[in-house]
Length: 219
Image 1 (cartoon, rainbow, N blue to C red):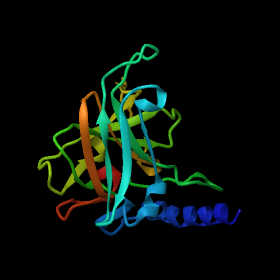
Image 2: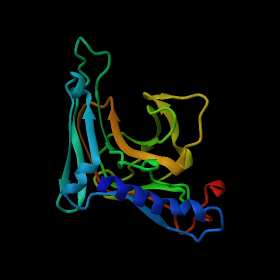
Image 3: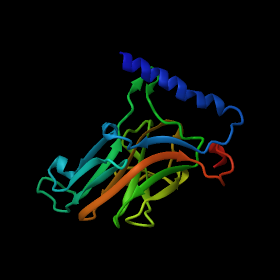
Image 4: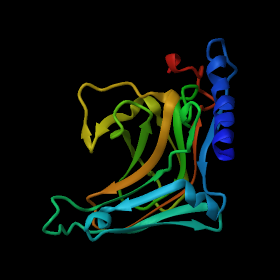
């Protein structure tokens, strides 16, 4: 019960930004969403791959003492007889608990970009955003474009560029992301055999110094 009350109190504090949006608001550069500061931060994440349902891929998420998380493993495209598809792995942040107001979510509507500090390889990864919408299996997805494999870089993805999908299928018609209620954030890799490694230091909602305005309707 004490944890539930604390989450409810935190939800009230986070909800204060919604009141501010009714009036002109000051420019805000960033809001930290997730980070890897210590090994305890691993508890904020869930990990899965096709091995969970009988496949042959494997994946791990580890905390590295320099202050980042390492999502790595091996993708196998071998398909057991009882399966129709294989070759995937992913991580996602856990839902941040419930409160008197429902699931705790991030309000990202004052920011233009999802920002990720990451270091990866030459594999193709996706960023996945789940909102507190009516269909739990809906995901907003975007490629994580790594321009300098093997080096740390900060990737900025406009929220408006994420595509609505369901079970990996692009939906028609598209719907606007419910950015006031971002529930989870995750990363995935699909259909690329062999070892992979993606390292992440932090994830933020962000504006840049050249961003003019931070309200959703101005994006």
